[in-house]
Amino acid sequence: MKRTRHISARSRRKESGQAIVESMLTMIVICLLIFGLLQIFQVAISELVTSYSAFTAGRSYAVGFSAEENGPWWRCLVYKSARVAAVGASGKRLHPSDSNLSEKEVIVRYLTNQEQWLEYEYWWGGNDYDRDFYSNRISPPSTHFSYSASTTGTGNALSRTSFSDYPFPIMDLMDPDRTWFDTIEDSRDVSATAEVYNHAEDYMQP
Image (cartoon, rainbow, N blue to C red; front, side):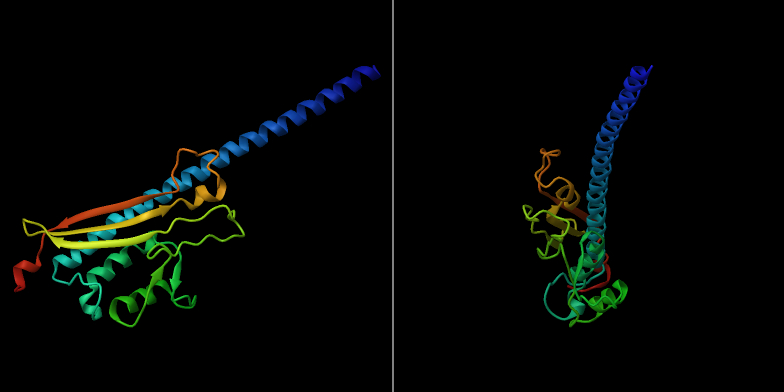
């Protein structure tokens, strides 16, 4: 009887240990799937935001604003509106760094004041990973945002916006050596174009 109870207890402990191992393996797989979905969502959002940025730049150009990048603020509104529309996919705000300034307040100043500088992580290659969470083996890609606006042969306003080397931070966080996702690149280019009827030609003289 004692031997039977001893064997039964040992069997239960073995089954319990096996169940724990199986649960841990299942949790690892589930976490990989969840983080992978989060990364897919982030890429999808970046594509949507880039498309919206292209449309916003084209709309500003179509009503007569200049596509210059330098000069008085009222001559840079296409350039600025493209960047502001892309804020949702631009990473952290780097300047102004004052946390007391709301996003809305800073953007309004940027659009209406030549002296207000605005910079986000993915605009001019300011990518940075917090080393408390990310491995030192990872070098984040240098992401840049660019735009262009022109007139097509049919007279429409054509705009293009893009993020070059858009990062995969969630992938870098959970799989720095690309062990699980070895077929995925370190970054990708995200771009969009928009063509808008050029209303400026109806009421503005060249």
